[in-house]
Image (cartoon, rainbow, N blue to C red; front, side):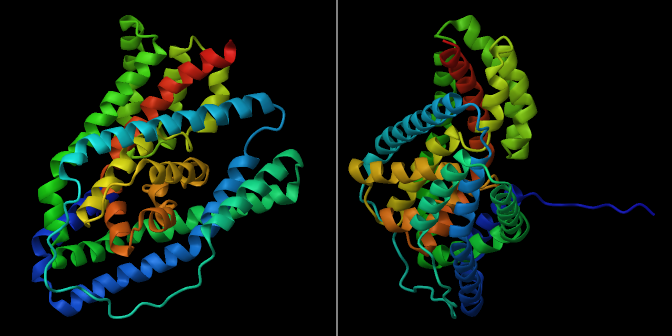
Length: 383
């Protein structure tokens, strides 16, 4: 007898979670609302406890992953990615301020009842700054002074981090987010967010499409024939990225399109694997927009430019330590959102859920813009 198996993907699960909280949140008995919220808070405590280890392991592995005989290439690549990510963040800030300025200062209408957790076991926390500094410093040190034992430890730590995120945390993400959504529904913030900001969230999709077009325009030096050819060669990887929500899954197609678009430049063979998991323009465009929308949803003002620059600085460094899993870029930013932007636990759960709903579109932008960047980088490095 043939058995049929059915597995619901992460994106459909998140959509169901949002709909259930939005339409049924008020119908859940108070005890169970508090229970779901308690579970979400406890999952967040566990994630926060392990985050320094994850940040350290990915940063350490990233630096050790570079080849030690191509220093000029590595420096050029890192500078190129930092500048590219910085420009995407500035673009996102301009889009966000432009879209949200007309509702600046609007706060959610909160219900009289505030949902409280039943309990929450607090875990010790290591400052993420320590992990950031240690991972970078040791990664750079062992990049110059190669050591087999250090490489083995790096591989082990990265595998452990991958296991925690992919096998433990990602499967419980819908439950993690549901508790925060129920809290927001109970206090009136969820309905307010959907009603007020849904049209503005659509601006993030338009902003990504515009950035993709601009990136290929720059790569083509604004010659229409080349612009059209570059995009046509990149469509297969965009479709793959949208359906898999994985930049890594698009790497073979990114190789193919980048080689076609650069006339088989040898630079592409080094560029693509080095940047596939750390050069994410889609994250740089969407994350700040969603962050600003979340701030306004909870009654906070938009960040001033100096605060946003500080946030951008942390973001540019932490991109080297982001996990290659759905929502990985947002996960490592949670402590920064708390310390720089004043995000509490509910706001962090809310933004993670929204970010992951955008994940298919973010992946498309990541892969398409990385393809355009490969053309520009190959041209610059060749010259």
